[in-house]
Image (cartoon, rainbow, N blue to C red; front, side, top):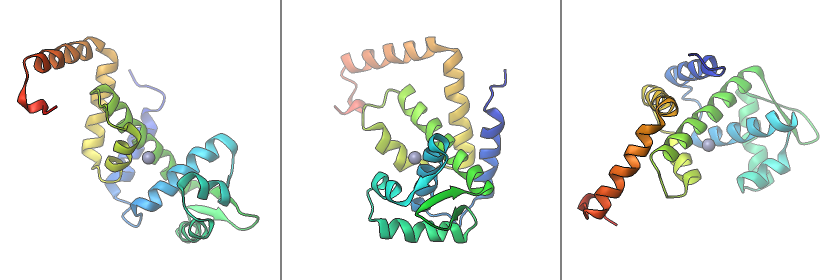
Length: 167
Ligand code: ZN
């Protein structure tokens, strides 16, 4: 059964497969954050962006100018940022990618800081891996008994003192 956002996910895989290699990890972080905020408020302010990303407003301005040069942002005046159509498309993909990885880490029961782990993984993952992770978590959605069995297996390993657990 196709879910409503499958179309966008598929386009996302294609975006990644095409490899927008002009984008650095930092640029991706900016675009993802701007997209999150614009989806909510309709625009993004330079000062808010700088605060959210923990950078100086001058650094945020520099990066926003770069992304504007790549035709991903529309930034003219008053410190207010908008996304271009292309920027929206990539921003949507970046947020989707983030959510797919975060959901996967929750599924496997990661107890480390999930946000930090997601941020580390998301910039380096290939399109085929992302697609398979997405399919796996969607499979687990419709087969929650697999997660229950996984949890049971983990408890057995841990009570048997499985050395591979290392903790
Ligand atoms: Zn992210």
